Length: 114
Length: 120
Image (tube, rainbow over all chains, first blue to last red; front, top):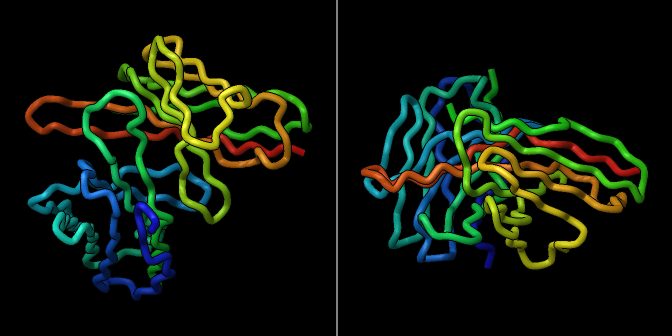
């Protein structure tokens, strides 16, 4: 089983719509969770961290379900500029030394259509 | 804040040459930096963890003698791809870690813009 799994899409969504996608992770001991956005041929940029209580940043809402080991991202009132690949990212440990690199999903490709 | 630069942005070289990539944290100090690699249509894969003042920790399957990492200061880590071959062509991205043990307890990585390596 892959460590972080996402539906690769693409999701074609009309502008203004609400879209959500999930991600599942296999390591139940994982501590930190993030959504990154990656545009074509660019580096990933942090979109938001995902907290246990859920968090919202403008049009974006992230949820974490530890029991089921999944993370979700909801985008409301989608804009053309939201078109990108959204990466689900898990940090297996927090604050530890040594190898604490992030584990990335393959990403979900979102296309917002006018 | 939290800006990470990476140089060069892209490089094309002949097979057998060595290529050095620099990763700098511009406005903060990073005791830990990470090196990732991304092949087309694949996810980022962690190659190694670079700790300031100590040896890098490599992921399984990554040759430490081929991918030399030096983290000489709190703001600079370098990755040298030695004797590069066409199969090393990839998008190499570094990240620098900010670990906040305070109230929020955040552990966040900020990425450099990446280096696209093409080996002919």
